[in-house]
Image (cartoon, chains in turn yellow, red):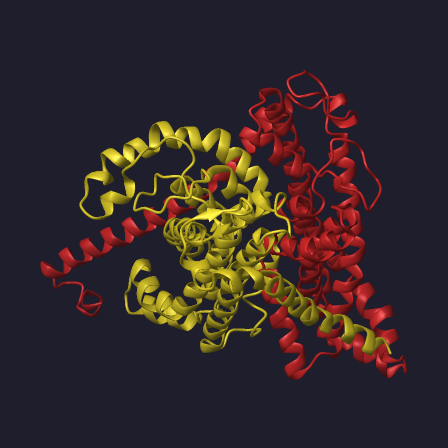
Length: 319
Length: 295
């Protein structure tokens, strides 16, 4: 009986996920039915009843761009940090450093948002973004990303906040996959006279590669779903353009800011739920992908507890 | 690599190679330390700013009074503290039994496909954006009851906390030595009694830390609370009425142009930060001690 009860509750998690998907999908159905593919490709979003039009492209664009900025900034630092913690530091320095990185994950997103809005955004507006415009902005092609009006919230600021927020999880998962690379490989490389850099580049990183990709994908999933911090600094603009220094909007941010006015009279409520469907679909695919990639690394190198190793830190840092 | 295979005395080319290799190695090491420093900066900046700005907002009124009218000095956010206590308390009451029992199944009974499917789903639920959990409970509970409520808020948090408790507890239960179970079973205890009397108590402190981590997570969540509990200017303890919460109050005050409310917002952020960090750090200390003891 006890077994039955615990089984029922464990299966309850599967039921919960199924119900969640069903509720959101059935809630969003009307919007998909009314606008069809236009819901994903349309650029105008007008919740005024009678003139309703829901095209979610600006939100999808903003979500992807901010997450991409976050990944580009966070992943190199996270990988460097993971290697520093696992391969370079030892003893007294390693633990405090690792704990500090994990604490970064414990900070509530509204605190990131408050800090981002009142402290980071002004600095970015007056110093960082004009500086980038003057320097990187002159470079052909990628320079276009860094030109535009630096004032006010924008995609770049939101991306930087996100980068800080996903750094701990990407670091933790990368550390796990780096830790399961067999010591023999490192020793072999060192015995051949390789420097630390060569050892890491030739022996460690190739083995950890798919795990690092998995960590990146997990970070991407986190970045896409982050709501509060982003909504405070992203600027809430519907434009789609090349410049990162322009206000944007993201899927979670628009759900958070419009759900109160959304009624069932028109399609507005359904449209917001449809946005949640788009978000959850992306997040679930990424989560599944990341898990498989990390698992593959752990299996490939025959690490200790398969399936467990990569997940414990992910749990730790959610706290 | 070629330099490493040459003898020491072949100077010239190999010395130059060694020099460039050493330079690369140095540059790489410097890069790694830069990454470390860069990662520490935000934690340093954020905590110091929040402490500096928030400390001045903390006084007796802050913890005991309801908000003053916008623009007027004084007032507090007592309703947010009570609301957070109510919502997170209910969510913990829901999530702990659900999470621990699911973990018991996964660690003690779960074998094969079903168990790994459940584990996979728990993993997926962990990655569900919190706003999605909010939208889900909004569409189910809030729309059905016709009102935003503390109960809806706590259910939304339960969606987030259940898988956290389940996965963390499972890891702890796995650390309990197999010999303990076998010894108890050999004495003729039924399986369920072994679990309730031997396995769970042995892992007790570890389960407690898992719960603390889940509470820390729930306490800091804004988006799901925004969509389900909505917020309130006044103290409310009725589970079916709109209720305030600290992170929600901070979010709302961050978005107003009223400067006096910004100060209160920083105060709220400080209390939130202190609460969450205390929970996380205590959990971390407890869990490292516990793991050492079990092993």
